[in-house]
Amino acid sequence: MSTVVNEVRRGLYLDSVALMRLSREIAAMEGVEEAGLMMGTPANKEIRRNAGVLDADGEAAAPGDLVLALRAKTHAAAEAARAAARQLIDRPKQAAQEGSSWRPRSMRGAFAAHPDATLALISVAGDFAAAEA
Image (cartoon, helix red, strand yellow):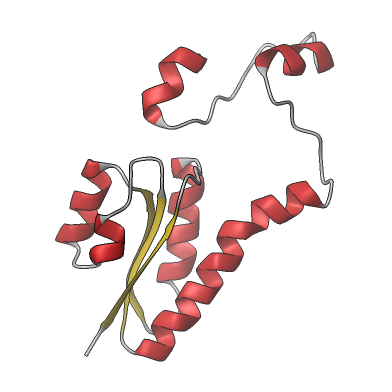
């Protein structure tokens, strides 16, 4: 019988493109039948519910929460995938802590550092994108 595992990271936002890439990596693991990392929006929860990988923890997630939802052939495969997902999720945070590169915390700071820049990438939850842009 398959094992469903959900893990919720409260208040952790990651860009949807990054989440799709991480989801593919987890889904490709041995024994994993279905995997997805998504924000806890109602639409995303509906997708996970329809895929049969949303449990009570995932249902309780707020729109600003990151949800790992997966189904694996065995409990051991599910736990291995969860551990791998934790590492993948934490990797960007670890790189920033190791001083890989400076990232401005505001548009004003970015412009001060790069006054000739003509492009800005805004990666925030959808509800806030228009205000930030």
